[in-house]
Image 1: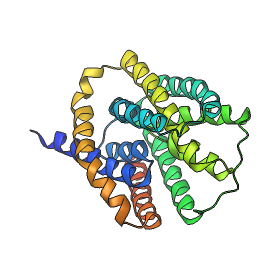
Image 2: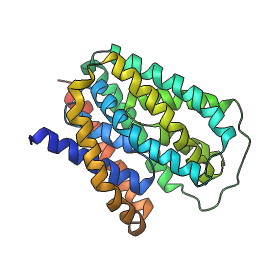
Image 3: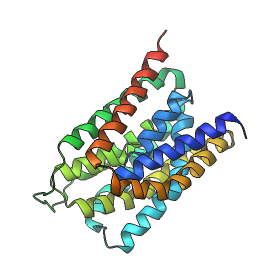
Image 4: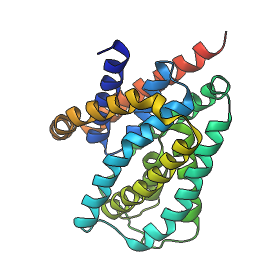
Length: 251
């Protein structure tokens, strides 16, 4: 077993620990780590999304079974999210990875800041707003595009925005996660059609193994570690790695 494969397992482990504890940021975390290891943006995003197909499918099914899905919200998000995701995935494969890498890292840096701001503004009670207008479809389009280009961001962009606007937290998380499977699947198909998929099997397998090991541990950690503290620590790490990647890109 080579060192690179063990690093991919470690990335999968860390990303799943973060996602299991925060309920988001698997893609943002794993993509940040992969870019810091020197993986090209398209390869990193493709590997993350192919690994995520399994986890998002299980998550979406679980939320559906638990009654956490608002179908009106899903209708607004799903198709625009798929369109944005496919567009972003296709564009990512047409650019030189070395040229686009600092911009992807800048996006991930911004995502880290967004999640930290969310941590400081967490509210126990929400004035819930159940109207799902056309703007939500635009949010889904943006979320899908950012998710594909940045290797993650569907949750931080869509969930964070909707909850901040007063949407029901449980139904929002469930509906966004349910929609995420279809967005992730569409992005993965696009990557398979435009990239040499078999070059990245070690990254994908490593992410899956690491994630499988971390899943039960993350569930325990989520109960014992203060959420705000964890969010700040994790996103500070993501911001630091993103700045490092941007710095190393320029001579």
